[in-house]
Length: 180
Image (tube, rainbow, N blue to C red; front, side):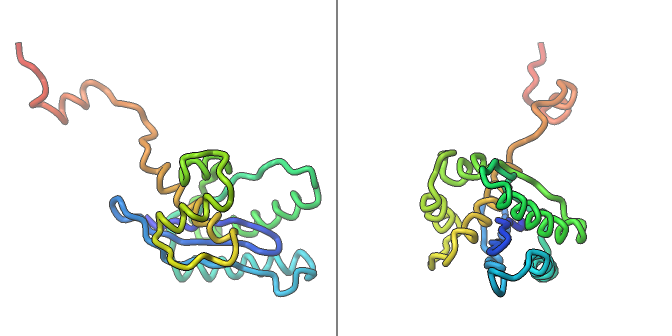
């Protein structure tokens, strides 16, 4: 399974593609999409995010895209810009029929570090360790994006349906049924 993790931002958007084979995770590609100029108008920054993520999708062919869910912010303008950036990134996935998964920041931190209140530094350290990345990425946006991808891989291991019918169990495990 290939997962594209995205940490959207209107000035810097981090992304990371990882592949899960059996019980191992491998880095395919990661990086940031930076606005050419932070003061460029928002629509042009959003276009850049969309176009660059389309290129990443075409190059890496992910099976799913994973995002952190939006959190509450006291600054409405910042939250609105973040929502626009997320929409541009989600559109890049949706236009390629890539399913989208969302996780809360707490879920992401907990799946990567074991602690839902982990710091950016702790997340970065664990992402580097889990993915065997030697060099520290320049921006936390990259390790945040990779963390979301790791979270999806961890969460997709958990069965969504608990148990099954006794009939199914008996068919699958005839040698475990005692005959009296």
